[in-house]
Amino acid sequence: MKTVRLITCNDAMTAHILQGALENEGVESVLHNENFSSLYRCFVQNISGVDIFVMEEDYGRAVQILKDNQSWPEDLRYCPYCGSSDIKFVLKKNTRGRAISAAIICAYACVPPGNSY
Image 1 (cartoon, one colour):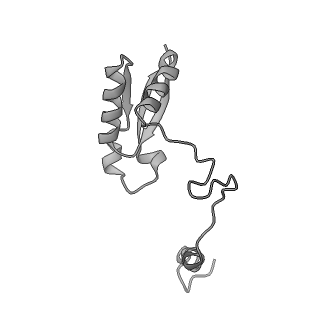
Image 2: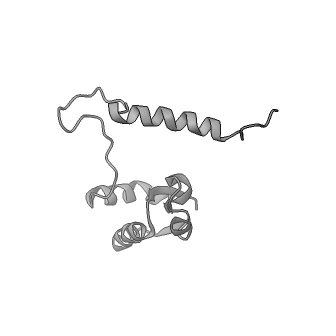
């Protein structure tokens, strides 16, 4: 019997709620990285998220249960405001300068001044 990752939650509370919803429908699940979510909360979700694992044969049923409970993340294919399918990531005008200056400062912070390598 093989387990597969069903979903990654941002915190342990959300993971326990989803695990309870799955158990109410008879789907066994296991939480992984539950303690790291509180220790490494400021890091990216791949490191600090709580994973919910289910049996491979229960995966389709578990996804359907989470969709029925409106707990499954929706794929954003269309703009919710205008309905356009042309969606792309761009920085706003007032944050573009901050992002560029932060990248430059990070590059200079790597090498202390006065040292030649």
